[in-house]
Figure 1 (cartoon, helix red, strand yellow):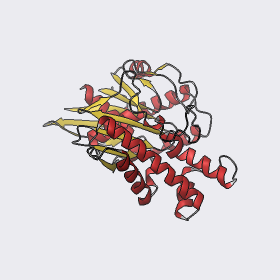
Figure 2 (tube, one colour):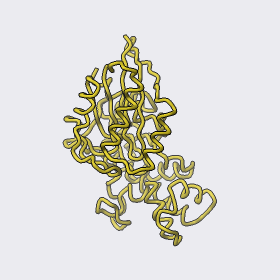
Figure 3 (cartoon, rainbow, N blue to C red):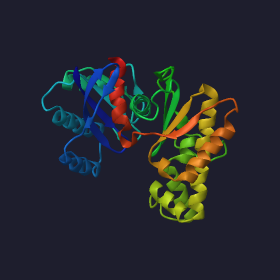
Length: 315
């Protein structure tokens, strides 16, 4: 039987949506993402150049959903949100990137709008589900997914189920401390994985050390500068890779996943970066703790596929 699922991704810096028509047979799911028409990409670019708010983001997402559904009622809606979410109630706690998201009842809003069941979770948990259900984590009973991009976040699959912890905050590997004497993070601690390994923080440190204006360097530029042999960029990038590796090794010691999947823009930093991450992780973990560190497979679509998987978990 064919079912139509609306998948939505409220990312930190972008919005995306897709309709997935799934057919279930012999226990397997065949699905294809159908995304909005090109006119929406132009509107999204125009809106991103202005100051986005929770209200404008919700209106934009509802508009994309309506176009994709073409007047039909979805079987269910899965939503990935780039920030803390109360999974049980579907209430967004806040966004670190867009104002107005404090205690927004997102599940209720979309359920009223589309008259369908709605499931909401944070982006790292959702991406972990997507990789486990559709991507590089298929067949793994225990995995850790980590996105290394604007920030660093993680999501756990344990015993073939998402693990969120008592308050839904499990997987916050970005704010585990790996260098107590390291630079100060926005969270108030020093030497967090995110403070060392995320794109914006690495860019900030490179700019400061080279005496460049604040905001003049991006994460992509750090990678390019490192490839060109700029010593400061090489040192900052390698410090971030090692910090991430130590965080992974500690997490592996604690919960013993069989694989760790890495996604996000920073993972495109080259083979040397991957080598350093793996070396630091293996050096930190106990010899008896066995795990692989692999690239995630779904790329930028991981939250959308994860939103589909979120619905399938409830089917």
